[in-house]
Each structure stands twice: as C-alpha cells, then as structure tokens.
Image (cartoon, rainbow, N blue to C red; front, side):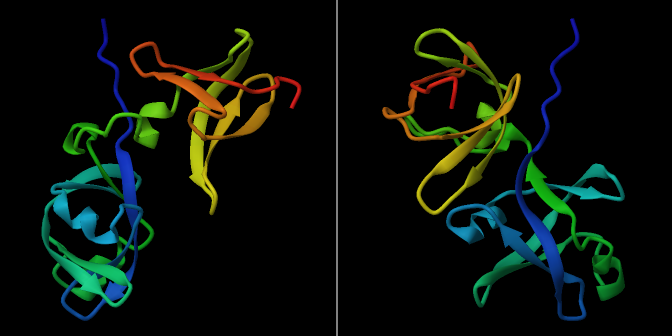
Length: 170
C-alpha cells in the first residue's frame, strides 16, 4: 500500500523585498498575521518545487510581515522568491478546537445532503466578509456557505464526509 501524500498547507506568500540584506515581505493568511513566523521550516514553492527553508528571523513591519530566510542573504537571491507560496506540513499545525477545521482537512471531503444526495467533493474554500464558502465540485460546481448548524450539519473527518442541509437543485 502506498502512503497518501498530502499537499502542504499554504499559510502565505512572499510578495516583495525589504531592504538590501535579503529580507522579504510576506503576505500571511494566519490569524494573527504574524503567527506565520512561529513555523520553521517553511516549505517554499521555489523554481516549481517545494523546498524546506529555514526561517532565521521575522517581524511585523507596518501592516505586514517581513522575514529573513537562510541562504537568501542578498536582495538579488531573495528576489527569486517573489510570488512563492509559503506552506508547512500539516503536522506542524496545532490541533484545531472542537467544531473548528483547517481548510486543508476539508478539501477532498465528500459533500452529501441530509437526504443522502451526493453533491460532490470540496475542491477549495474561500473567505467572504460574512462567512467561509466551500467550492463543491460534482456534476456541476456549487458554492455552499460554511455555516455550521445552519448549512453544515455534520463534519466527519475520519469518514471524509460533510453533511449539509442544502437543496441539490440550487
């Protein structure tokens, strides 16, 4: 049996340079934003593949985050990282609280209505001002609000199943 290989969990992206000593600007998806600095090594998608890179230093800078990565000690080297995703291994993340889920854990789950009608699989999630939204791909694509106890009735990560109260015609 081949072990399942999971995609790294993306926490942010390198989106610019800071100074001349190789520091980079980081856009973080973590809450609070500087939580991304708690993880090392980072997995950085550099030159088309994930590479483990050691975070040497980091801090808040204005409304953003800046970081120093081992081996990228000048502006020119650091410039090669602009646009690269920053991720971690799933087991680097702390356990989620009851009834809270990492998006990475929900991706790939089957979505079934309370009547047992299969809608498809979770292909992704995104944030809106009001709530998170699941992108469910089956015979067609659906956008379902991830609102627990209203739309999302049950999440069973062991069974990789999400039960929803949703009209399949919608």
